[in-house]
Image (cartoon, rainbow, N blue to C red; front, side):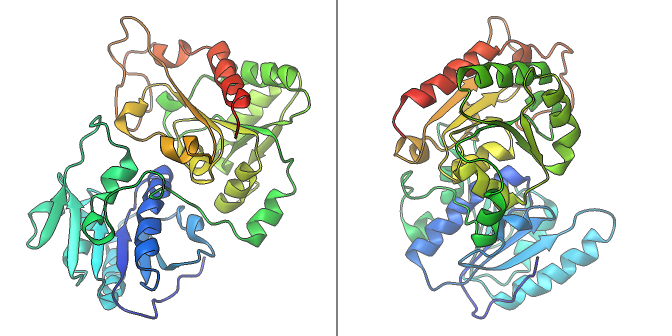
Length: 357
């Protein structure tokens, strides 16, 4: 992806080198700033792999990619710092807690710098910090919004929502896949966020029988292909597999044509939310009460419908076992995932289908 220089100084620069879903949620902040200051230049720093979310973006003028692999990440960071400093942003928002991002913030030359409490940047002179408390009743987009509230006004859940901007080439690529489909997204970086594969196979079979006129498609990135193919191979009627066949924005454009998206608590859930899809979110080891689900108002406000299935069972006091999920269940039983039944997910899909979109 081509990275372009900002033509104007000032504006907003966002530091968000976290996972893909976090970057999607942070787009709400960019939308809010642009709505109030439509002429301001906007730039972002993201980790390699997330830059595709901004391809052809209508108002994000600069996308800086930080490749964090290997020792060369530090020389790369120095180069990024020079570029960010040259912009002299009006405000720099640091949403991450890396010491490297605190250093980048310090040398940014921005007039106003903000960070979350707990960030190494908090103690820097001139940095305004904001609380980030999981389970405080706020969605992550609202917590992020606190950084720019003084400039753009109070958080409005009907306006300050994540949004992606697929372009014509992304929509054309997506058009090769069936519209009105039921999309299933079984992938996640974290094992404890993955609803068991056999459940996904059974779900695909039930949905195919229940809605024979709607194609079922397993969707994910290239790294998910082996898992998705294995799930498809277990099905009585093999669903389509779209794994790495589309770019990030191509996937977003495909989701926009879907009847419903069923996803683990992972990036596809947030992409679907940003595209105003009808969504069923499956939460195994994590919980939507942390504020990382789909922004409810963005769905119930007429853009789609959302049901989040939060696996709970009597005596399961180990859930949630982490904020982002783990590589394996620390208890060895993964009861939070196993206890969430196919019937529960089917009922959630039926609920979405029964309500007006």
